[in-house]
Amino acid sequence: MPDFLTNIFDWLNANSGSVQALSTIFLVGVTIWYAKSTKEMSDVMRKQVTSKMIIENISIGSQFLSDWFPDREYSSSSPSRIEIKVVFDVRNEGNASGSIFKPNLLISSDDSDEVFSLNPITVERKQTNRRKEGIMTHWDIEETRHGSVIFVQGGEAKKKELTYRFEIENDKQVDFVNEIQSAPESVTYRIKTKDNLAKEYNIKVMGIEPERDFGIK
Image 1 (cartoon, rainbow, N blue to C red):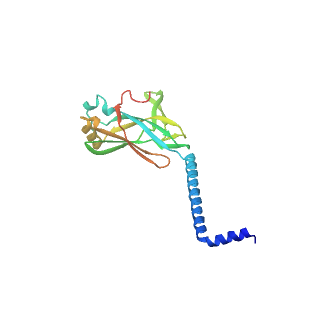
Image 2: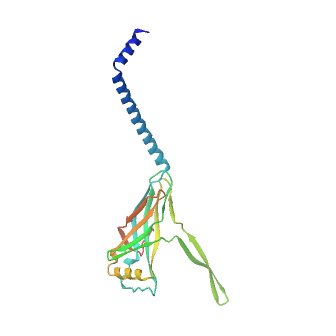
Image 3: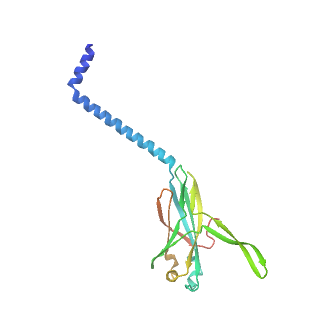
């Protein structure tokens, strides 16, 4: 065996503990580097195949703030309703397409323990094709379905307007309306929904205006 190989083996035998420690440190370093690289690659791949939904710039136009609201009388024997519109931006910061369910509108007030959850209007019906048969007048009903989900492609942003109706037809609803008539600005509005990844959103709305002339122009 050549002398230089003999010298190497002698040195390794004499320093086996140090060599083993250095090998362990090297392996630990490689393992850490590999784990970090794998995580970075996983993060990149996850961003490419997942959505990231953002809901912002929410404002409300409410008939509770209309001039006629404080002076009107409400009772369960004469049902009526208050209309509320919600405008908001929804955008997708992810690369993959995503969606949110059209949010419910939660209404409460400082003077009441009741919380009312309103569904957005997703189906509209209107009368068309009026025709007379003898003394009877008949109409066809045209139904338009708007769907219950808002789809947003990766990197896309949308402005949406939804309509809600607060039906005043039972004692709880009548009591709520009568309590807030003297201070309709005390009503609290929140929108509640979730996205396609099951992330939940429960957002208090700060921008409140009268419903008249409100909405996307």
